[in-house]
Image (cartoon, rainbow, N blue to C red; front, side, top):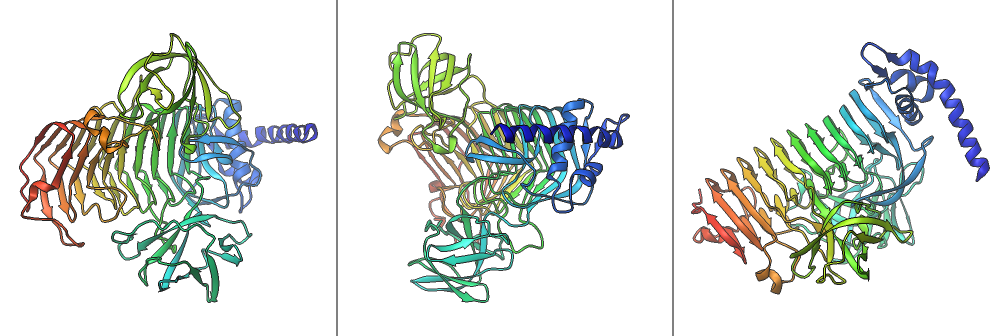
Length: 589
């Protein structure tokens, strides 16, 4: 180990010696701009610019002069080779060792201008990590992978016993007694776990399809001509459609923002990632402007990102999305929420042991000195006490269990299996002029208790376009909205799939018998929107206090099968265990 470390220091010293010469040639002192091209020439190759990116960013750290790193309008290729990997804990993307082509850890006041460049990645390398950074701008670039982390096969045969899939050269594979293994040209495996059917003409999930969670161990037979027969009973599919083989692990998100301030993304297109498109955690003041998530043109793809397009966990300040387009990903367009920690033990009068009970949140280190927390009953989501954290630290190697010391004694009502969560800061959210659609699952999952405004957007999602929920028993996602305005949007033929009920859905993860005592989400306004309807209900609501529905149009659509009962339009809004509802008369057009 000492030898390896010494070699690493020696390599760094050589790199530092070479950097000064390249820096002088690449840096423009008048504009404070660093040209990436000399770094690509000296430290990169046509097949791998990862060392060049690493070196250029290290120059930015060392000199503290650079305000803009400028790429050019061409293709840059990146591989894991030459990059350092380290353990990362990225909420809802898992805990893995990862390497990053552009690691912006600790940087301040830096803009990366891609100049229209295509950043083409190969293998398990993440594009960007903005960690403990401030005033960072990323703009004018496109992100793609030459081998996607999911796979797609064209359905050419179907029976009660099997399905036949034909793969293009973009999706190499091998077959053995364990089943079908999707690989790249080097033999690296890209694990898959479920099937999901897409309509390639509509470029969206097929009408009312379900996820088919079959794992990747079904017997597979190579029929020749790049065609595989998967032996599994009762699979569904339509010949001519495309079957997505959904990836098993979210190892490779495109842009990760952790513990950072004032980060903005402008004019970025993400064609693919092996995790979420943008995942931000414990960060504040985030702007996404003209962010596009869509399948790469000219490729044999109907899927863009193999997870959520965007996701925000325990962020604060503001989250703004303007003029974005997010389509064809295999999970939600966005999810904005906090994290509940489950109480495992009341250790001492002012000390408790808590768990991250959702494995997707492993290592999520949010409990800090001075944090205001709430105590929540997991059975009804009622907040019954507050406290302030004096100290907190992990007590196991997996970083799933924490000891929390409070400034005062534990509230007397606290008990194991209840939950705690931060309650002092929530992000104000403004989402305007965006398109969300053609994806598996939902549109926007709204879980901030600060003001949220959704306006001038178009939705065409397989499940609910908007979901306000939260629970402390399964996903452990803290939500409970307090001020949401939804105005001047078009809900265009939403709810053509499963993954929920209604176009706007409000509820909780509680058992049915607990609904009467819970009003977890509050104060929602639905104003001057247009709903083009194919399925009822339009709104499915429970455990909600305060709803105003005014000035909306409800228009019948026949672009899909339509189950609307026109003789009972009042059924379009389904409200159970809700209070203070102010609803307009519904007139179907």
